[in-house]
Length: 394
Ligand code: PMP
Image 1 (cartoon, helix red, strand yellow):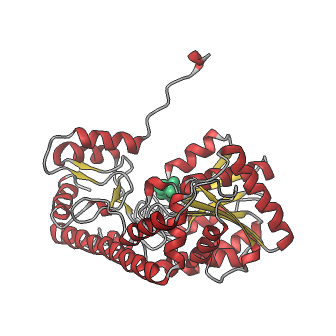
Image 2 (tube, protein in one colour; image 1 turned 60 degrees about the horizontal axis):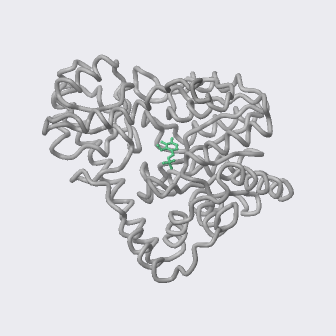
């Protein structure tokens, strides 16, 4: 029966990881896969996570199933973290999911169930897995302009013009902060203009927030999501704990449906639980439990926030160092955008040929669309990357 299967193209980012591993050059620099690394190249377990794990080992006396929605305390803690007091708690239906990816997948399935003819508007470019999952589910995708290749900022006018073509019942996928893959983000005034278009068209926003705390701070990075959630009649939020808690492999995420009515909330909650049941029954619990412990314990939360600030500060420092080195080498400010971008990624904005040239000549591994993981750098490799960029004539 399986003869009919056809080979799928390998995931380009995962393929790059393998190429990097196979490269014998000592000076190789991995700017590919989106994980945070410290100055020694390690992706550490955060202190608060370690402490919570020790505490959990002591107090946990069962691993019996949780509910289909996961532990309600996890949802409460995450609603608090992402939405603060922007909307009433009883306006939010929420389930734990296997990572942010699980939340994204369930969100698209929910859209399909509710509105089989809905189109999903995605930024050009977006996280490739958005497109892959939408394609897999056979959902109609519409690209909206996002990245301005000239300025390496947001093509805001293009974005607004494209979003105006959405219709009531379409979904507009937005990155809550730290846009992946570009690093270019809207300011709050621009977010307000996007909200005005959503209200005008009746399209429903879906916010994917996978890097809260990696850009300008925990509350700052959630500000746009909060503004949207408190301004529109309905919205979807997919949040990941992989990066900001450093618990990538624990598969911890949450999907929220925010609506204005408590009555609707019950239906949304039941439908989300139903979707969990069909796909995997109970969501993973270990990471969710750690996150709940950290967010609800003053000492653990303070330690986590302090370490997250260090992580954020390191990435900002690397951005400034890289922009300064490029300014020195090029004698121009044209790389200033690297210091303006936020989050783990920046899109350099160059051709695939130049990306390959940098890989072959300088052992710099960035994704083919010239996405660089800034956290893959350190003080020693910043000058190597800067030189490679100049040599390639970017
Ligand atoms: N959305 C975006 C935009 C992401 O970059 C990621 C992580 N690469 C995710 C969602 C989901 O991550 P995870 O499933 O590992 O939590």
